[in-house]
Image 1 (cartoon, rainbow, N blue to C red):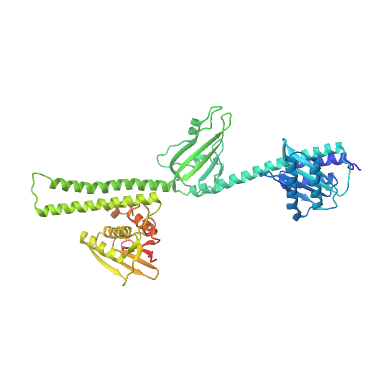
Image 2: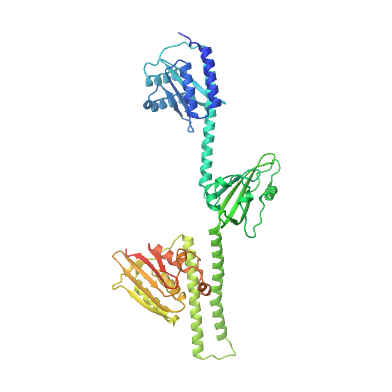
Length: 522
């Protein structure tokens, strides 16, 4: 049996090479390649493999030389058997048998093998195995030197793994930062900008290349009455030594965009302090609250409008009822009949308003509309609606324009009547100068289309996209004088969509509007 040739010299050279790999190379694949190359040359071997333990505690080949790629799955299976045997108790004969099977799998001419565990901080990282095609006597000193080499290799592998994990974590954080829907700004201890993400650029019109290095107050410029000094606010949350992390700071307001526009935002500042109390960095999270503010404003207007809408008919009903109940007056039948008619009309107004509110609340609660399906004749619904609405106005003329043999559909008669009534109510309200209101329908083999056309004020193109939103009302002089809650068209759209239909509008200012919906016949 022969000892390893010129081993002291080779040992020194290759340990030096591994040490250089530790300090100069942090790429895991490159480290494994260098470790494997040095191991094969140092031991005068022909074949070598490096297996590392993964997150599932399985050992798999990560680097190899002298092995065919298609042999790797077989070697991985052998490795699991080998490691499983070692976990159940160290049996030299069994381990040698498994290593011999691995050698025969690679090349039957391989007759000797040396396996070196890669261990760091008493934790197994992996296994390095070299195979030779000749027998060599390995002394105790040789084993100690080889183990020393393996220890150095383990350090190199561990450093590379830590670097790889850190790089992956950095990539994850960078992805979270860049693709977050909210704007993110990172400040240093002097409150200068270190980094911003794409959403921040979009929201503020600042470019990342132009913003880095600027002070926070140069970028975040508050408008109106917002008074917020970040530096002073941070002094107020500075933690004492050993205390829990400080709370975040939150402020809302309008900021000035770089292009001169304004944006409503809510900003959360998360300061990070060193253990000695020094500020290290601040993470600022910007959220666009423009739509939230609009929704809140719409809801406030809605509450105010509903209160007014409820109060008016109640006041009228109470006034007429109190008048009729006066003991000091005698009313003739015509006055009584007229007063009761007003009371009845106002009660109907209250009922319609309450129905709209209940339907809207039900849609929100149930995330949709429940239908009670039956045969519905839209032409008959339209005729009855016109008969009800015609006596309410003397400035409008109603016409019906339905295609002959207009078919029935499957639908909820009560809800579809609510749709027709809302469309007719709007046609009357928004054509204050009168004119013709046409109600009609057309059909094909697969669908029916229903429309209501007026000659009123019309709707601008910019407003048409929002008229079906909840609580939204067209912003013009007529709207401010016209009663309404902004729920009618929202309910119409919800009901039509529940019937698997679509509703649209064609309109131009001062040229009237045509609301039309299409429903499937099946």
